[in-house]
Amino acid sequence: MNAHCRAFDGDSVIEIDPDVAKLIVGMKKAARWSLLPYGWFEESDGSYVIFDRRYRLLCLTRPNGYVQILPFAEQAMRETDANWIRWRSQHWIYSDLTHPDCNAFSRSRVLGVVERLGLKDEIIRRREVLRRQRLAGWRRLRPRFAR
Image (cartoon, rainbow, N blue to C red; front, top):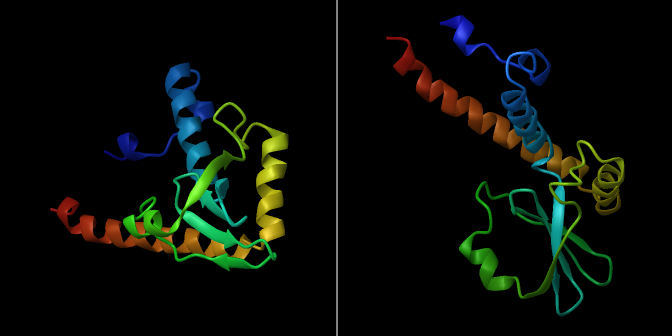
């Protein structure tokens, strides 16, 4: 059983099946960057709402430079978000073709947004929240597999 459950990385699988290796590397890539800024909504008053790769809202920046960190929601775009975001345009920092994992320019743009808006501590906090939730989920499942 342990042989089937061990983790694979893209390098070891590439010899067996290059397509599966690309999929695994792509999954790692998506998870690594999912909490970092992916784009923003521009509002008519000049404010910007920054969101991550899963469209969870990170922060609101006002025209005067004030940055407000928004509450973390595990799901993307809650109904309450849609009620107060009156955006007139949507923009992205990168696309799938220019993913920061393999594109230095996109990587510098994403990290620049994190630096300029002071999002580092919030992103670390969100990563820790998700990690704890995953561990709690595994603890609930473990008794089922122990039988």
